[in-house]
Image: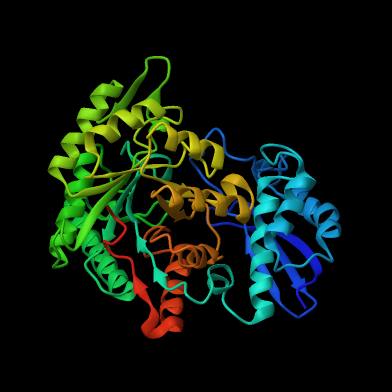
Length: 425
């Protein structure tokens, strides 16, 4: 009943209007799995390769060649395999591509097929994907790191940092935590409109507001004001998080970071982060240094250990070997997990297990160019990572994930648990 009977792909568009690939897998048992590959705006140098067509159509961003790779190469190779043995299916995909960075068939092809296969297997059994992957004991709903002010490559403003997030921990259930976050998001809208005018409530790629701010402190002050305005306490009910995406503010020729109109050395940045942590209830900082900055990560971690989680994304790109390097160098407290950075669910699973077995955090994450696919909601529950990043509570491609988590909470009933503070530090 799990035998893969049919495989096909088509070109669809993502949340930025760029083409992406969607794969569909159908099993002999009638199970159907459908998955689409997201795309990042800020990408790590060592991510697996996302293939595009080039040419004039869609400004060169078409994926018809990738669709053809699925329909003509992948489909015939995996048809007849057992979809429930998803690691074997993924192994076949990796073997077919045969390159270290998925450059032959494209990581965007492999990601869509790998995730569609797992969904098809789950559907064949008539259970949700989180239970297929995590078993019937998987019941931990993740704490969202919710990006509600966008900057950097995700917005058209002058904020140097890419994401300013809230972490709602003062709740016993995911649904209550989501309510808290939505209330803060609405309060932030009022605050920004009153202080900066109506243009301040335009939103960026991930649904967060993109106000005309220049300094990091402006955004953090706005978050604190919104938390208080919504009737909550910063540092008690709701903490803050940053995704610096520091590679995008790093000048390699000068070995400096451009922040708030200043040029700061790596040691200056360490002091700068320490000042921010003293002033604001920040608990997570992602990519505080450029993507080769293992040493700088380690130095900052020594200074703030026990106060803040330092998370690698561009640094580690869901690559198990790079993650092992980061762990050996004591560079990170955890890493972002994005399936399309590496190409298959199995390789992402290896990264999650490596982190968890080392006592570190794994944060399941969306991309800035997303689709309505809600699979990462299932991954966050299946592996009980305790964290998810999937943007603001706005725009359908973001709310699709939050709404699926609400459905999972309802499905689990009284068995559902909420991570809250439990995995934060």
